Length: 476
Image 1 (cartoon, rainbow, N blue to C red):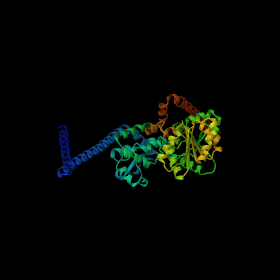
Image 2 (cartoon, rainbow, N blue to C red; image 1 turned 90 degrees about the horizontal axis):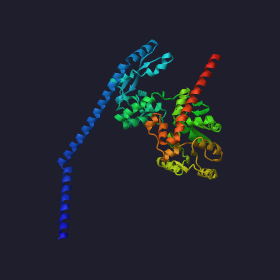
Image 3 (cartoon, rainbow, N blue to C red; image 1 turned 90 degrees about the vertical axis):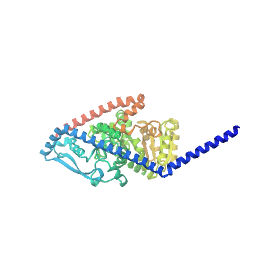
Image 4 (cartoon, rainbow, N blue to C red; image 1 turned 135 degrees about the vertical axis):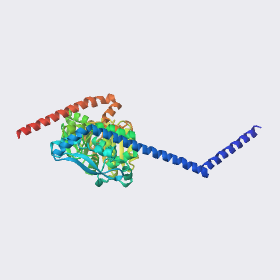
């Protein structure tokens, strides 16, 4: 009977399933099964340990061979530099540093007298450090070798950081050279320790080549610089965020502007925009163009303080101060999506409101009313330069918001409409090229013709300043 066959098959499946379960339990819980599992675990552990040790040996061998080769090739330069330093009162200097497992070692360098003509050859000073690499005190890539008095890292990170040899090159060094070291050195060390790999080290080595041409990272620079008729407040990211919160806690309306190479070009041709920048409470340096201009004109820029990178720092400070933010600009839906990102990452921050920037002159009064009704302390305006900055200058007297900031394309990035350049692209100073690749039809004129125009203006400014200095020197 068909029914009987079905019952027989069902019973057979039950017995087979029970048998499989008994075999599985026996394999997992029996003495023999436990022994087999332990052996498999031991094999995996040994394989992992062997792979880890092999990687360490290969890395150490590679460091030794490359350092020895470089030292042989550069030995004539090293000898001449040492003799020159020795004859002028310097020589080989030593600095105590913490190496692997926090052991002390002497970091060697050529010591040129500070006030001598040889000081201009300071780029040769690290050459003896190659000997430290050969000895095994250091590696080519790794966290910066710190002095014993500099132990700034948390204990939970210390054992991981000191499990690696310090390096000639590090994430901190590259981002410092690129003026985007907004995070703390300890957090960048933690990022490196958690993600270290052969290809990651190769990437750092490759990015170090262009970073070497940026000049050293600038920490001591004037608080304010000015070129091509534009004043810039020379602040770090942390200082700028704190300054904005301080302005938001005052009673007077304040305007904050970000200035990049394109903005300077516009200001050179637009008197109203140049006046707006000169009257702003805070003008911040944005982009590699401003950094290079500062280097050419001997007015070093401390950090690349662009609005997109600043938002997380600003949100943290605003959240702590219990202030509110209103977002204005972008296409319909963009400001709302950016507000969702902020709400997700900073749940305690007060989001007063959001509105798109495609409003007509007839609708402007309603927009101003909505902003005032929101009781926002800080207004982020993303209408593009120079329109956003002129709009703020015109309307800040009609708004109750204390700080109004022109933020360009910030809302597009945080809404997800336009992806941000990866960090390694920003470390190379090539975010502008990444943006060009995203929107070539819209960006080609600004980045290619505009950047050339900006560079020409900066070089002319340098020549004018140098000529004025020569005339002044002759007059004396």
